[in-house]
Image (cartoon, rainbow, N blue to C red; front, top):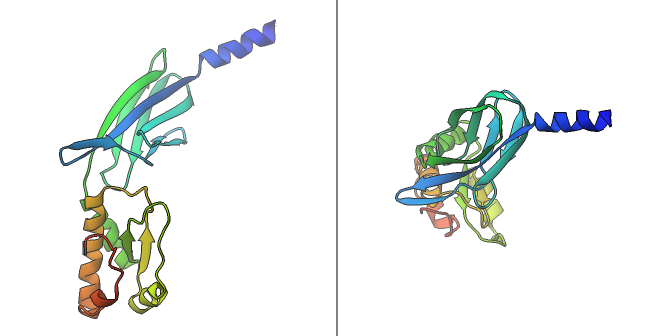
Length: 184
């Protein structure tokens, strides 16, 4: 009987944080999908599901730094405190900031890893001559499929790449680029 009582005590000292993250885009609030949520000082990480929900388990009482990391908003850091029960129903709102995507585009250019972003749907489309274009202009088509981030943020990223390509190659690349590149 003693081992069973010990096991029950260990389980009683374990808590969780469960919640939902939404993203404000203009006047619309949508679930923040595929967003990383972590407890910084514990190494616990979760990814939000299609409804923006997440859950982190195996926490003890104490104060923790909860980090929310996404590609269309500035990171969110918030302190949570577990006193004597799990935190259920935590709701966080991230505000879309497409400036982050412009910074990522500039970093990609600096690292010579420029991309042109596409949203292709459930079955990606590949054109016969797209590899030739990619080699010629040192850029890669990057298709999000049907799980794309904020459309406005994709446009902001691509606009930085368009400006770079215009500066380096003139406007001739625009005649050869795929017509489904977002924002062109």
